[in-house]
Length: 367
Image (cartoon, rainbow, N blue to C red):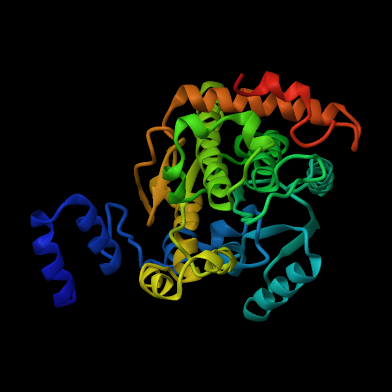
């Protein structure tokens, strides 16, 4: 072990917890899992995914056209996992597929079109995927949207929340039956991974109102992103409870990938000064390091049976008190399910009266 790391370990007992965590992160010191902040997705996959087993697996990875989603898809496909890439931009998806197959000529990658902000598009994707007759072992809800300005989806819902949370909620609901069936038939535990973020800690209970999340009267991009990532954790908490009650052999967990050098970071540059960005860059992970926790939760035997948990740096971690609120998680699930039911029952274009004007939304949120 490097001498610098040993010295850091010796000094841990004399520093406060925040400093201790920061030093541990910067040094890449491993946690109980044997992995830490410097661990890469390839390292995790090499340890957790024997090639003879991987060839029997099918995974769906959203947001796989760039960033940690593309890296996750590459790492899985390289080891024989059949990877399905839902993508809005089919050209970008095809380019990622070609790059993966240059490295791994036998990689099996299926590209299907989807717009995660659109209920109709998610329905079409799920119908197309299920028609292929593939099993489904792993669902990685990775795609993330950050917008500095207020935008609405075709279903008239704030775009960040529609993409990051509602889209993944519906995708999971529509594919859950296939995952439960696959797990029962193959005796291989199904794994669902919601990619969240540490910024969920920035949200307080007073500002987390379902109705306002759907159609905010005032908008702040970072707040909207943080709220959607909080919702991803609450989704994992409640669905884990339901799956356990059903005795289904499927788990769902949330992960914080770390602050990664991706397109979302570039979007933040608009309001981060160069000097601050330089300092923050010391905490940034590479794309491969960012994908490591996702791969760990999706593949490791150490996470078998663990559900409703939150992970960071390939170790179980603590989320905010609000994210751990079981009552809030159940309430959000019920509100979301009611909204989705109504969306599915109404024709496209007639589902809402318009942003901030749908009277029915009052029933789904704060009064």
